[in-house]
Length: 251
Image (cartoon, rainbow, N blue to C red; front, side, top):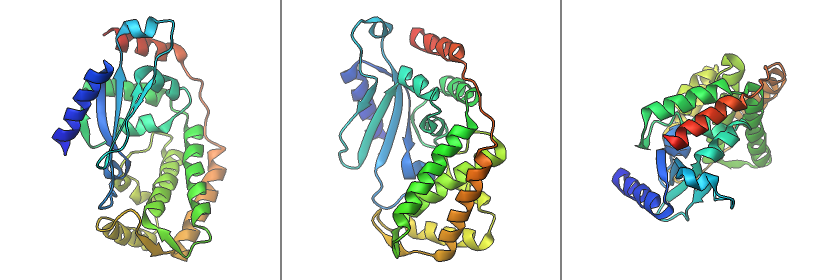
């Protein structure tokens, strides 16, 4: 599949007259818990010619292709990426840690990750992950059977929030690196069993809701919500971000 994806990325560059700076796999395949029918969520960051940024008329700052044959391509202009960084968008932090690369530029990625780390708003990002957790828990609250996919989205979000509360740093993208934060061997063993099941079923597969696990998720979410209020806030350094933008588009 990798050669097919790389060829498609080259077509995107030619069609949209852009330079892709890096491209990775996101979603469940990169997180480490894909289903048998999971899409390939290809995400990329690109730049345009410098003349495009100097025109009076605004230009599109994203590329979003129709999903075909499980291939989902979405790209952001570097300018959009840096603006989202100022809003503490967590997607950028995840993309920069993906274990699956289709186009790579180690120097650019390292510099962008260091910039993201310097602008990391731990409180705001934790609230984002807890918001996802709350939404998923509400969806599953009155269901006797829940989607296994939804359970893992919830687990990953709440553990990402826990990572930030405990470490004050950007959480890792991969679920395996978060799993040890569960801290309860009974819960962790159950999650491991669910991981084995998920690898062999499709995304619509449902399981009976386990009350012990569900209560653990609710209690952890509530505890983290209290701790989040104690996290430090930061002031964004727009000048540093502007310098990085100019360097990237003029290189």
